[in-house]
Length: 304
Image (cartoon, rainbow, N blue to C red; front, side):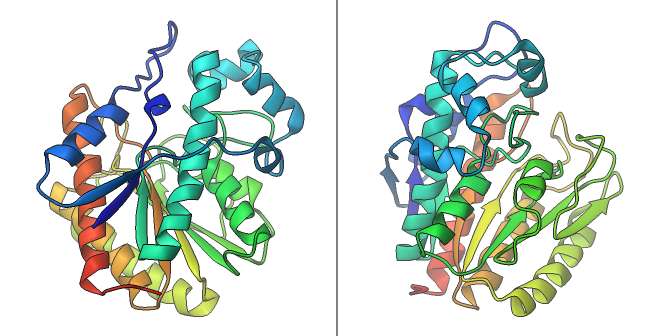
């Protein structure tokens, strides 16, 4: 059973400036509904402002919520921050937190958006406005829903914002496996960074991931895993430089769930990146990712 979080505000109007489009978030849900697997959709509440400001600078939060983000920051983000975008990013952050709550109940749950790992304390960047992963991790720990959290970021781009926002915390470990020659040009320092050369394919990628998880999970001993499950390491991705196949992405996602499940660790995934001219193909890639993870979680029964 796939427990998936979605809200209609995830699909914002296309910005007048910038190349980012939001229709894939509805197309993901369409692909989920067209698939014969069972799923339950959950609607999130917006993330309360106090939890956003626990991670982001209050002045920047005010700029976003009032749709008054300075032009230089909008250029870093990649699109203007309208009132619709301001609403959207509150819901996507609330969605990742709700997915984590559902994961604690069911073992695995997914947010059909989120994974905004480039957002920093006082600015957004790379199509990311608020960092839902950092916000959710901090709230889970502060409300004692988790004791230690591992964030696994397998987007093709380094999770630089997440690394910076959570640096130095002993209760959060950040792992980023990404393309070395891709955005951002200046990388941050995660707890563990694994930068890959161009065109790494399925077997090499999966071997690297397997070794990293088998080292980090028993040594750090998290009780919650937040997974940035970007599908942009795919060979056909417009902004990626790696070479995973559809089968390789599925093996990747099942590996994350299986290794967490075998240690009794709940997993909540956020959608992350995926780019291409064929938006339906990208959305289907995301949908298959979540369906595979739910299937793998079900194979092991309930985590708690």
